[in-house]
Image: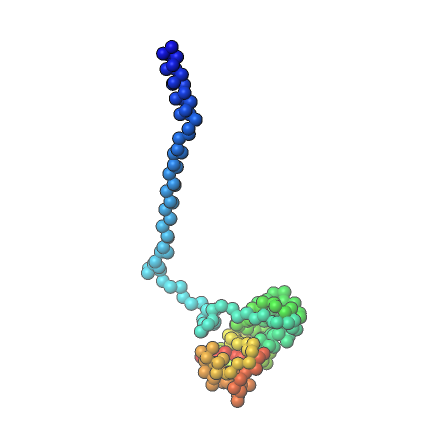
Length: 209
């Protein structure tokens, strides 16, 4: 009888223990991953000389230069009219914008030539006539060339940068924006003589040294 009682009590004890679940063992939070050390760029090697400036880089050096100029017409425009507006020629536009349709659709992103590649028999005077730029500006931009000579084909001429006036602006404000003087702007743009406020739609030649 005593043994049965002990066995019954043991059975009840085991049953009671299994019926009451114990507290869950907490899972330790994962340790944060260490951020990889930033790789610092290697300092320049003083033993390696700085590469020389190429002829093309010399051609386009100057304040604000080094990247191509772009222009987006707001409405469709004939290619010849667009070239005249940008003081270049249709062939020069097509050189940098292959497959350019005629008329040029509005909202077309165009690369504006910063140079001019001559054809057979061209001179500075003929290039001035073709682009609408003053010959004196082309001579000033290309001092190393004989202004009277016939240029060899594929001669690269430096062309001035342009500034498109999208809204009426005082000439003094344009000069400040371009970091030039009003007198310099008038010297490179004779049509500005006596003008104090430049109307929208004008294309100005940006003065250069």
